[in-house]
Amino acid sequence: KGGGQPSSMVFQSRLVKLVMGSVRQVFAPDVMWEEVDASDEVMVALIVLRDHRMFDPLQPGHTFSIDVAAVEREAKRLALPDQKIHFVSGLHNLQEHERIAIAVERAHRTATLHESHKGAYRTVQHHHLDAEILFYELERSSDYLSSGLMGSEPTYDVFFAPPGHRRRKTVSTRVLPVYVLSLMHPS
Image (cartoon, rainbow, N blue to C red; front, side, top):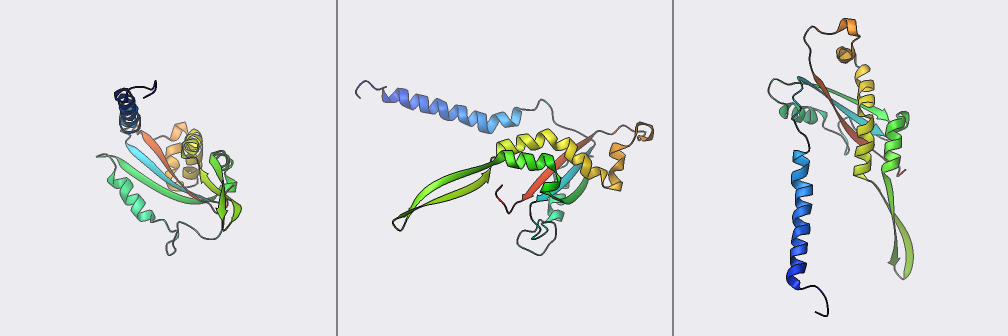
């Protein structure tokens, strides 16, 4: 053992690390919020952003199609009793939305590997988005982005009506943006 820690201490420290990690990853996210959001209405905004014009993810019939009807069904299935769900979807070019383009750029990461292939070294780059950074950046601008999408739909103007034109009954509305990125270029 040569001056090292006894094996029971190593085992205990590893066990403590495992338990702390489990609590942090499994239990803590469930108790982060002090209350459940019980809004009367929920606006689910499916926002598809792409950096190409090769296909439309909202159109059925190809490999990368999104089943919008299934997403809407699931949103309604997950609603609380007496909660009204509004659903809107839209396709946008990533370059037209400065805040999202910046969020994607900030979250972009590249891992460079040097591999031996048939006696020669080659450099391989793997691109990915850092989910934590992307989530943080999108969360910071979600109200701005969702209001623009809902403002373009005449049906949903009631959510942003001027003070003199509000509904008689006060309704609490929660905006739940769902972002889908269709990216062809790494950066």
